[in-house]
Length: 214
Image (cartoon, rainbow, N blue to C red; front, side, top):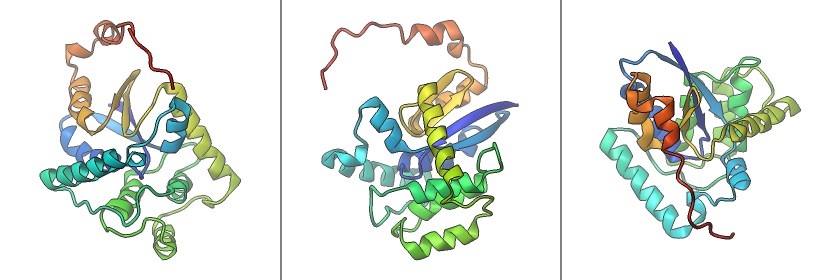
């Protein structure tokens, strides 16, 4: 059985769609998932990027596209009342639900994703957050320094691994970014020779001809 890492932030609709589609796309593969929450804004700050929802026309396109993808794939998706929003409360709940040194289970991740993307409500509504707090089997105080530090450490570890966006799925040393990479993950797990290390590395060998100044 192959262990894979699923890096995500519940702020991302693409991460939600990938989470929902993962069991179907990887049917027949032998795998176990480590769900690794991180702060997407931390990735953006590190790599010098803006999120899709921070660029007006791109935000409008993103919301239309994810609504279409949910419709196409039969995934319940309602755009939240406010987006983007601060996901820290949700991320800390996920970290607090995990066993010491481990990662949150699929049930906890599912509850958080659907809290955001399946209701159309405000993800940070205090009453809804309290209800989610009571629903999840928490092992630590989400507001503790230990949980806050664990989230920072998880984000730093993802950056050190080369993660630049969410969702990202790691299979050994290979990183697969985006909802449209799920079929690549399945092919890799099934042993497609296209993913042999020499070929995989050769595809990233092109030298940039122009680099834009920030």
